[in-house]
Length: 406
Image (cartoon, rainbow, N blue to C red; front, top):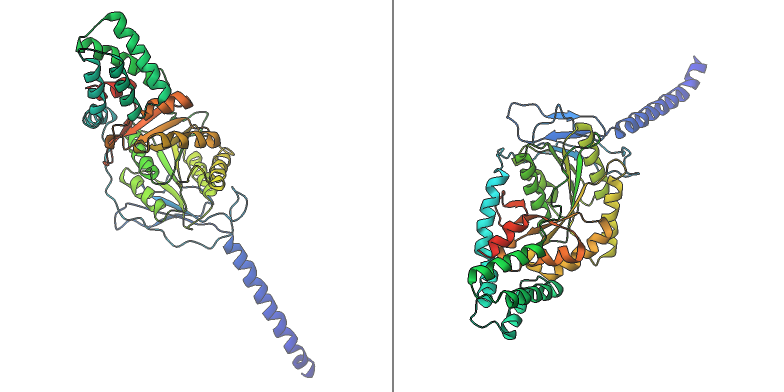
């Protein structure tokens, strides 16, 4: 009895140690589980659908327009981080909409462009239809072109060509002058540039579109509107919210996606590593076999070296598992020549493949289309002419010129 009493404290200590070790082991195992919650527009009676897979949306379980919430990885990109299980992330229920057909919106945007930019075209036509076209008139034509942000070199080129043609033809007919002006403007805008978007699956993987630009140009809105364009073309789309610094940016993108039944992958941590979110979004797109993954990025000034380096990192990390097919730079048309400076710097960092020109309806400076293409060799692929959800359309060189000369 005495021996048993002496051993009792030792037995109690051993039992406590065993319990502590067991608790630590259970905690570590639980901590290594990375849980993704999928929520989105659904009926009130539907169950919350969850997945314990480490890094991707479940194509069969996730409801249309849902949100996959990912903890920000703390280790190397692509490895499952140690995180606590997340609470359910709830996106406000948004009715699913049917985007407008692309053909119909092109006509509507052209009509808006006619109204917004016709002062530029009208001014040129009035000058060139003058009874006497002397050097003063040509100077005014050049000034009009420069005010439209076409750029110095293209403006001089256009004036010299028109001057020679008018002199040779000896014409004063407004219709003939308009025809010549149209021909030369179309040449400047260059209808031969490839403006198609690479948004189809290839080699067994989705197309990847990275959207970049400075602060305030409307990148997130553009991603949402482009998602509508792609859905209208029967594309299966997934969005990645790699703008992790602006408050509510991820929620804004998720709401855009929910409107047309497109899921969004985002982090639940403000200021999370954007490259990690982009990586996980592309990984989810590959596993789901979607057609297109579009990644939204945070706005950054082109003169901030650290932020530009971070953007380069986002692209490199994505390319660990898939090629980036399109890098679209969103520019505000009202910024004029400053947009050209932005385009040059972004092009050096991430190899821009196309320009999205927004707010073209609020300015007569549509000549920035010519300036960017001339200096960078990068085509304008999309234009935005309004605040509506379907006010984004593919850019067409001849339609653009016809609209400003209408």
